[in-house]
Image (cartoon, rainbow, N blue to C red; front, top):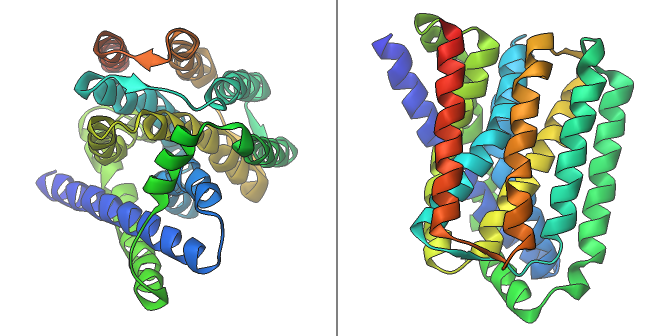
Length: 317
């Protein structure tokens, strides 16, 4: 048990370092390829910051533990909103000016409902996975076309996020290092978390839902707190919503498209997917009000997360 905890913590450190190295390296390579910094920033906010979770899920699926990957994908969405956004807003109120956030939140709500409905027959098929992937492509095109409508403040904020230093060699090295760190970090997580979960009475699905999702969200929450204190509220909210869409549409969709079927237990459809929907629903008034997520609202999100965790642990008994 002690060994499993030690390797899990080491895996989380590797995932955090790998994710940070990947963002910096990808930003530098995008600049080298003359990709507009704002466009590169959009991709980094929504996708690159989700790659540690994707690495864990890919290793889990490769090892035959699709339940762990399923739990992590949906649990990460709950942790994104409850922990990452909640902690960031508690650290400093988040001023939101990114106009695309509201329509993207609407897509997230619809996508969560769609995944739940598609899973009523016991899982996601290959065709359904391909459809989810295509929806993500449409979302990316939509966000890219809305880029010109964003305010100068939002563009400056995203540009600053995508800024990095170094030449081709350094940034290529960063990406290679990130791949190595993510590979080993994800491997340790997939191997050791089920051991810890069994000691706590959890199966792979719940271990992925709670232990992996919360564990991989902790470095992101720390980064979000730092971003909030720098006044980068749009970056925090963009990551939360973009990463959640990526988890549902690309991670789950990709798993189904590649493996042919992702089993989804009926209990998961009745409890965890509705919980993910309710957490996303909590963001609606936050994005439609005074465009500021206050400290009180951040505290509310954290309390909601703690309540959900308490329910999950109570159900173990």
